[in-house]
Amino acid sequence: MRFSTLNAWLHWLEQLHPVEIDLGLDRVLAVAKHLNLLSFSATVITVAGTNGKGSTVAALQALLSQSSSDKPRPRVGIYTSPHLINFTERVMLDGKPVDEALLCHALEQVDQARISTSVSLSYFEFTTLAALVIFSQTQLDYILLEVGLGGRLDAVNVVDADVAVITQIDIDHESWLGSNREVIAVEKAGILRVHQIAVIADNHPPQSLQDKVASLACNVRWAKGSVANIKAISHGFSSASASASVDGRHDWHGVGHDGSATTIADLPLPKLARESWSAALQVALMLDALPPADICKKLLASVQLAGRLSVVEYNDRVILLDVAHNRQSVERLADYLVQNSGDDSSLEQKWVAIFAVMADKDIGAMLDCTLPLIKKWYLPALQHCPRAEPPEQLLSSLKHRQAAIEQNKQPNDADMSELNAKIMLNVEESLNEAIHSASHNDKIVVFGSFYTVGEALALVDPHFADRVDEIDRADR
Image 1: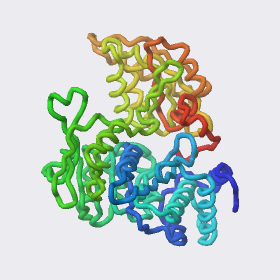
Image 2: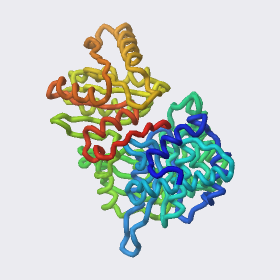
Image 3: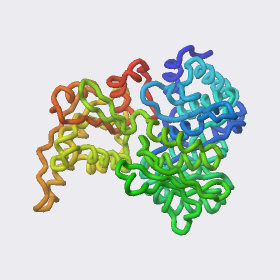
């Protein structure tokens, strides 16, 4: 074996291919064919989209792994990216990260196939194939594949999935995918196949996506109310009865493979996004794998995903962690900040932010929707992350956005306090100062990237503290 440890493999992979992100299927397809990885006996579900992929996969895993009285518990394999702390989070078997030794063995098999086919693979392609090797050698009922970037040319798309899920579509990764939703949707729709089961979670699907679904004659279920005149094939939530809706309870409506309507009533407010749960419930219904209503209720109330509006209590402080890193996801985070700020008369006095982000993101849009809600900003440098926007540049952007708000405000608008922002050495220093300097009523929010949240989780959550590695996660 080339290397005996996962860290050694991953450090080598970071230097192996000349281009970090190299979209295209020819190279990975050649190696996948050599390893016989193009088809599986398990039901394969591929999930693409800009926001909500990870939450949808988490909801699917929870639903599809439920046992029934006459059948053994289904086995589920999951491939997602990126990870928060340890690379093994990307490959899950039955809800647990894969063993490092098993992953190293799979990487060795990919390496031998790469040499035999004279192919150069990127970091993401190499590790995606390793995950597929593990799945091919494990008796599984379901395989859940999360697209890393785009869809059409992403490495997971070498596998023809039985079900395709497309989540919310927004503008992100413009250099690779395009600068508007219509163009980006074409890339996401690349995971679709002729007559395939397709579940669309986007509430406003671009016309290009609608056209692609129609041209392939997919067996599609759209998000409720997203496309005119298709009520018979829609899925989504509606408010529960007036007496029950006080605590946020609601009903879910779906359509089975035979066109029959299904409703699960009086569901609790979920921990994950409702759009993600709706898509996952619809997939389970189409696969005749929807658990009983009482099980669905328990799952919605309990299933969480680290770093997605995760609340942790640490050193007598409430810390909110969210990997939001583009406009749409940060708008959702901002809504949460407003709803959980307490006294509406002083929203800007409630949240302290630890914010670090990749330089290629729409940082201005992210700041515009959060700036009025933040009392103080801590801007840490990220460890092992050359793609991060320098804290000095973030501080300059904050000053520019605040000046623009002050210049454009109307006479009756409330005055914003003077910008309070500080450059920090790292996330740990930011957390320590935020905890000791903020007032008792202040809450701390950590957001901007997987890197930012991953570094924070390693400090504040015991579940992650013992899983820290020094891997440079170059493909985030």
